[in-house]
Image 1 (cartoon, one colour):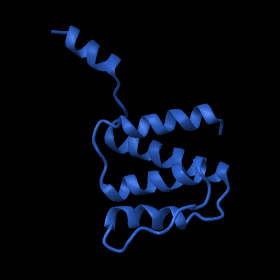
Image 2 (tube, rainbow, N blue to C red; image 1 turned 45 degrees about the vertical axis):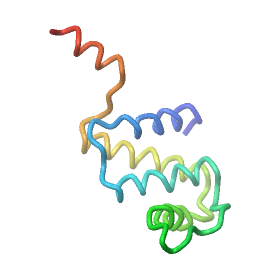
Image 3 (cartoon, rainbow, N blue to C red; image 1 turned 60 degrees about the vertical axis):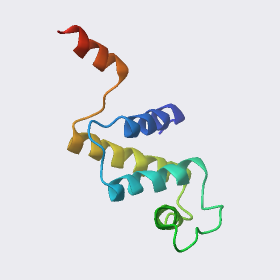
Length: 101
């Protein structure tokens, strides 16, 4: 997978027609971080930082996963979400919709 494809996938994840559940987004976050940063390089968040801890734990589970494998996993998850939630939108789509009326 090329960097351009990976970057497009990351943008698609931000423009899903419906916002996925937190646990679904968690599993797009962790391979994205592994694909861009590599294995966890920060301290585990404090116990009461529930969201930060969940994100860190999911990312840490991918420790040792290759960049390429993480990028593919991220792409596959976003593609699944696009199928489930009806694809993505962008400003051009909205402008077209507004000119219809």
